[in-house]
Amino acid sequence: MESLLSIENLEVSFHTSHGVAQAVCGVSYDIGRGEVLGVVGESGSGKSVTALSVLRLVPYPGRISAGRINYEGRDLLQIPEKQMRKVRGDRISMIFQEPMISLNPAFTIENQLTEALHNHRKMSQKEARERAIEMLALVDIPDPAKRIKDYPHHLSGGMRQRVMIAEALLLDPDVLLADEPTTALDVTVQAQVLDLMHRLNERIGTAIMLITHNLGVVAESARRVVVMYCGRVVEQGPVKEIFEQARHPYTQGLLKSIPKPGGRGKLYEMDGIVPSLFELPTGCPFNPRCPQRRPECGKSAPPWREVQPGHHALCWLYA
Amino acid sequence: MLKFVLKRIIYLIPTLVLVAALVFLLIHMIPGDPAAVILGPDATAEDVASVRQALGLDRPLYEQFVVWLGNLAHGDFGVSIHSKRPVIDSIGERFPVTLCLTTLALVFALVVALPSGVLAAVYHNTNKDYLFMIGTILGVSVPGFWLGLMALLVFSVQLGWFPSTGFVAMWEEFWEGLRYMILPAITLSLFMAAVVARMVRSSMLEVLRLEYVTHARAKGLSEWKVITKHALKNAFAPTLTTIGIQYGMLLGGAVVTETVFSLPGLGKYLVVSIYMRDYPVVQGCILFIALVYVFINTIVDLLYGYFDPRVQYS
Image (cartoon, rainbow over all chains, first blue to last red; front, top):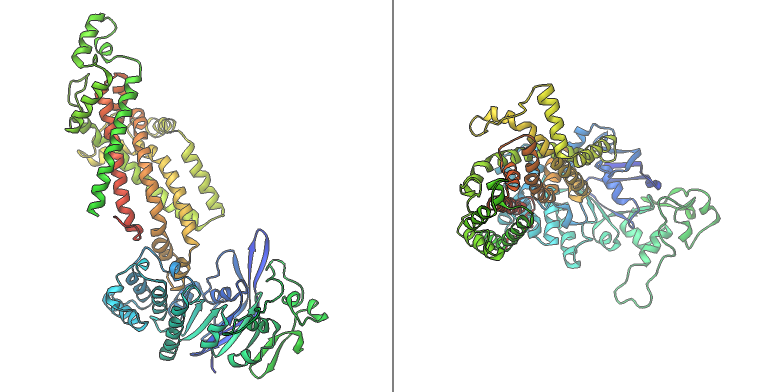
């Protein structure tokens, strides 16, 4: 598949009074045109920070210290801020975890939706409103011409996330960065929103980077998966292969921790906890928790190896 | 909305009765007799007694209070002991001066407080922010009367930029009137500017961390738009409450400022009337100021819904 956006050796650190936290450490992955890529990991694994880095919106005191983000022959980390603003919301858009707090409570849906159209396309208010209503209809919001006059607090969580999706797709972007788009929603609504994103992906052709901690969400939606742990990509490959034959012990642990329907007995639990980003263990960051630890794991960083065509893992087991 | 306003007005009544009672008691607790003040030091005890009787001051306190309150209910603020004119007329003459002064002070305070508070939040934890914090601490700690005197000394006496005494009404000659108002209004505004600016800064800091601000940036909006539209409208709601409360401080501060700058406003009138023990005037003025304050805060409550649409008026 043709690569649309590629992240190369991205490093992001947070400089705080407690020291420097390396939130993203040498992350590389790419997303193809029209692809749905799943990015999986626990909180603090660096998946959201990576997405924010793509838009250069890493919050203070975070700083992108190294790496490249290639998009349309340019390095997004190098272009002037003004050009970057033309990319944001137009070519690459983003939706967030909490639709309750990611829409501005002080403005109507119409105001928030048409804003991006005015900003990027200089549309008239009438045109922009028509486009916004059309988009709201596309994300299955009933009676969009009426709903567009509502404030966010008039809508339910699922409806707000639909509004977010509608807004993100208003300008037919190449990439949609979806940061835990279903986490805050009820299970039934989750399925609806995922289904919606899927349909829009097929219809509009927008590539989706689906960031989640939920492997189930990835299994349903993505073709390829990137697994992250402590700011590193530990495994990457086609969904089917990862689910059937995960190579990295962390991915294996994640898969074993998913409750199975009709399953009996105690759920698998990984040893230990995610280490603090201020005090990462030497060598492989997963080594203190790893059931298959070897002597070299605590000494030096593991190699990134292709275990099967298109399937990589960051582990000494495959050195 | 209409129901909300009506409800507010009904709630207002007990507040105002309480204010009226407090004012009445306080002014009568101050030693001194208006009859003695009117007649001067050479008056005989009989003269004083007859004047007291004429003014109704010989009647029991509760009776005087009930009579006054009863008249108030008809909109009758009473008659000045000193000038024999209806209190409401005197208030009507002087209040426009105070209104001009406090409104100008409010405008000055907001013009300074909004941009500086926003900038301090944007440049959080930098030298600009520290400088701002020092400035606001000065603003709240410098006493108004001292600042007024210093301003007069420097800008009127030394530099001669502004008149030091006298008064021209702004509603008669706007620009000339403004010249007389600028120094007092700036002096009066300083405290409010500092308080409001700190409030703007802290609520901006809170809002700037929120996800919808990141979302606004992710749309490709300019930082200017993100801050002035998305962040400021939300941050302004709590600030508005502070402004309403601070308006009361302006009305109180006007008493000092009008005295220092000899402006013929309600504040100065109040001070003179206290010296004269002109009970009806003191009571009327304070009650009127309380009314204005409550009125301003009702407007603030109604405006709140614009900045935060989640507010329901029911």
